[in-house]
Length: 396
Image 1 (spheres, helix red, strand yellow):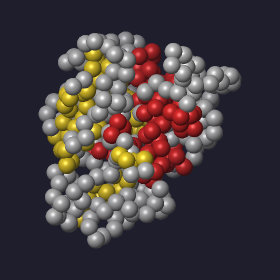
Image 2: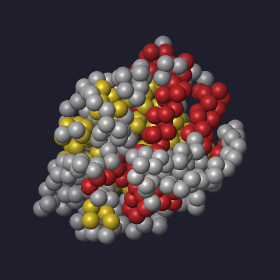
Image 3: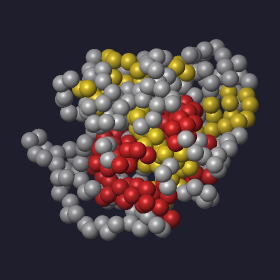
Image 4: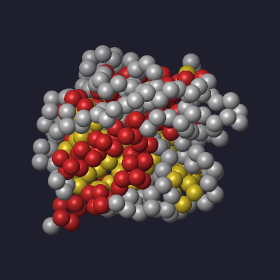
């Protein structure tokens, strides 16, 4: 089922973000560079009939129970590009995944990035990421107290860097580019920005960085000076060269003491986790324009009751007006608080899926990591559209 798959993906990605690694040393095999001139090494490529060209038709469910169908249209003449790095999804055995495009990669790009084609040309490289198997092993067998875990191979980062450099050399042609990632993908992109973009010539092409489900460290109350030295946080839709970073938690379930998100992973006095609200970049509360997966390739059944007494038959569903988001501080945590404008007596759902549940217990330390991207996909599309217009005006 899609929800079970997404739960596994989120758990793996957050374990990576939390800095876990397999306890037993593993001999580092040789990983020759990929040829990113071979389009088979790309999950999505503009103009190709691949996962990003999937059906994104949406049923819009209003609070009064009325519905309408929203078609999706990609913009073949989009003025900027998007470069997307997916989260931990691979079920391959061992520590590092293969380069084979499998169902897991296909499904997650449909959920998290394909819809951005409404405002940008979308490039999504395959990369040899840390697998769910390796990350689950880290969870089950943590390093002994006082010991240092072996370093993880850098193959995943190296792959993304190679793909980025190929894109810059052969596809960019001076175009603006939006970097998009979630969980492990956001971690890899943060490293890429630090090493290859921040303060380097490539920064001139950076439209924005959308870093979802991660901890981006900034000085308390400041926009820059932590992880990034010259890439500030975004405060307006038309701002260029900035970053949007956040992790989502229910308003009714703020980060607990053992939370994996919302604060620096290593104690850092004077530092905090960045929180930028895609629903209101100016800093206030705002309505989330969400797109939730309903059915994917006909494999999943409609389990969540979006509309009482009726099934959703389109691949996606949206519920305008249901969700409001705001960045808040609770103790040491800085995170995106998700408020539900619920009406339990109404015909539309008064809740949303997204919690990680083990047995019957909600794992509150993960928050709504599963749906960080789904919650704000419509807002992010609007932001990329405004940035694209600003980029065009700047280039003039």
